Image (cartoon, rainbow over all chains, first blue to last red; front, side, top):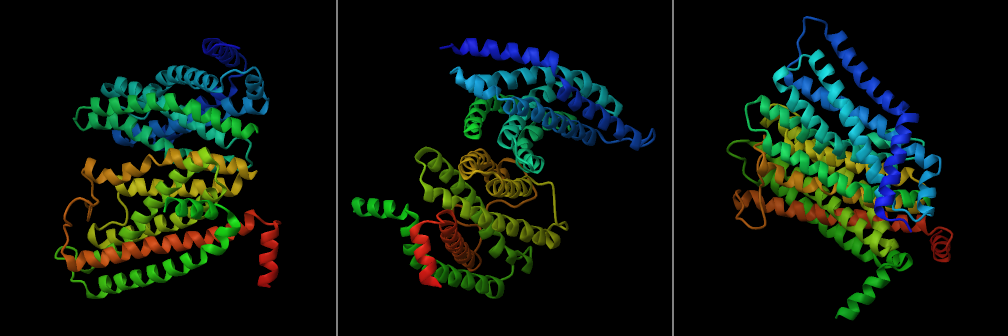
Length: 225
Length: 250
């Protein structure tokens, strides 16, 4: 019998190994993020300027779509190669595995977002004064988005029309993190105090990382049976 | 008394008994519901006085409010049935949940469509980025997602469990819709009537609304039970009672 701490360390160790060996879906997601940001700059041209509200909402939608792409690859490959069954056959906790996966994804995606989001944002005309608030709220709301996209990926894993199912199921669930996350900066843009909404964003992210791993393990057990 | 209820409850949880015993319920709820709805509709559309601000366009409330309210109630019921199914694994509860999904979907779509129609003369726009409208649109997508999950996931056991979980997770949207008009200063008007306070409308206007709300709830009940009957046949196909019913019918 392994303790939960052993399971956690093993899971984190494996995630680190996977990151070094198979980071194609991560690169895929972030290339998507940068490319679409670039496409917007190309299409707008040098003379047209987007309002700040549009730039900010675009950043959130792009992050959400990139996370959707990344989550699918990161979670489904383990389902297909039988890793979850192996994990369960050793009587290890599946919830801890998913907690480790989601939190590790968040650390990696959060770091990458904090580097790439300013690049795309500034390219699209984001005000430098809003930059640190944008990055902070993007990183915090990305945890909730990663958890919910992961949940969607596990539910629709292995279905032939998983793309449509993912979009229809995951998008409605992800709208609160996007509303609150973008709302932090949008409120600050309008001159209001953004702390209350920021606290709500933090609360949403903490709630999702607390409950979603358990939900995902429940669904995976259903899927494997 | 409790014994009678318990026996009835356990009997109704069995598809063959449910199939035959629910018919009078369907008949009565559809007749009463249809009558109440028609009375309320005619009263509201033709007889009730016009609003001093909105004129005659306010009359769409008699369709919009029942449909919206019923679709939100349907979603909460789906979540509750999801929990009951996951914990106690009652087959009939899952059949009822699957029957309720298309009903709730249609009611939600009617609410959104009639709301847009209402918006054109009153707000000058068919759509606005308003908290209640957006969260109702979200509810529509949740219903569509649940519907797709139910039809596309195979085998049945998987679809049942996963749909129950998704219904549970999405139920957090319902308080957001209900309270969004109070939390956020939005374009959508506040609650027309609540359980605790005196309605803000005069009786000539809110009485037909009560009729249509009651009528729509009963019709939703009847429609769900009709769907549930057919789903019983479908799920239990190949069993003796189904074969017997089919041969006696034809």
